[in-house]
Image (cartoon, rainbow, N blue to C red):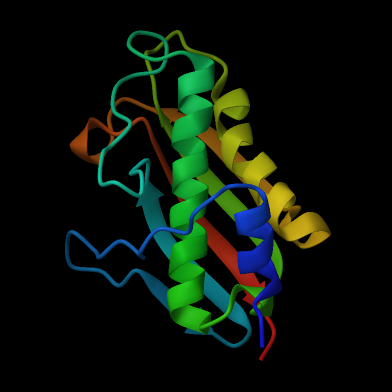
Length: 155
């Protein structure tokens, strides 16, 4: 059986990366009931490069949006690893987005739109979600964005 979400990713010219391994003492995802909790995914591209730097100093909003898209693809990669099939995702419940930014940067929501837009592009209405978009003074490996997620899945 074909995974409709993987087909949609291919149609959008997007490649699902391998699910990133944890870099510390935590698990990449945890299931509870019909919810999948995905640990924070950083702005790491499929080739292993990291979109790094601060919004408001080193990076433009557009570069931040691209970083957030990498985070969203990594979230989907973790969901695929956990569920075996992305078409088991029933709903993206919530995204929490953290933007590595200068103190005067105020466009955090625009940056996290990169992830939000990707979720809707890939999952349709199931990708619509609640979210937070906050600025922080630093992130691991100086990455530009980190996002965690709560997904509801079909059992």
